[in-house]
Length: 131
Length: 122
Image (cartoon, rainbow over all chains, first blue to last red):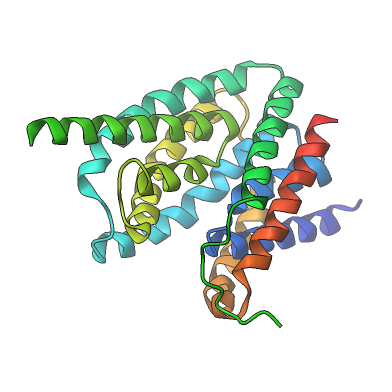
């Protein structure tokens, strides 16, 4: 595949997952599936791309959340404190372990998420009447 | 009252810790854990849960990214086209939000995820 084509495909994949992320439909995991399954990027590099992908979009959304007072302030210190410790250790582990084993772990995680999502009772009200 | 305050702090810490594990280990997906945990055990409203989860996950992501970078798992040029697409997608998303069926979107999402699971495991 030529460089230009794979670049355009990557832009398109980023665009579609970006739309889904905006809907709150876990775009991150879809991007990881595209990267590892279609673009054949090694699992650890794909996860790195996902981290870089998430940061600017989330950081851009933060100021308006803060302004609207939607953030539970008393959650921040304990959740971020414990989260930093755990994410640091987990990131270290993920980059130290065998890439293929990491990919298998990712597969199990997807299986759980996918099944839960499929069998979850549809509580959200549909914005469009089913036709 | 002080007891109540104390247990809620522990719940927040556990929720953040679990999200951190997913975030560091899989390079994402922390929100899929954190949002339901904030709404369930931590009793936040959905709106607060989404906003708070973003505020918690941004610093975790930043730390994970730094560690991935030090360990040679971060490729900026590889990420560039996805970032460009993501920016456009984020802008479009707000406009399309009213026009799609969430139920079918969720089902399609679940099928894609399961497809990814099969691919990763086989």
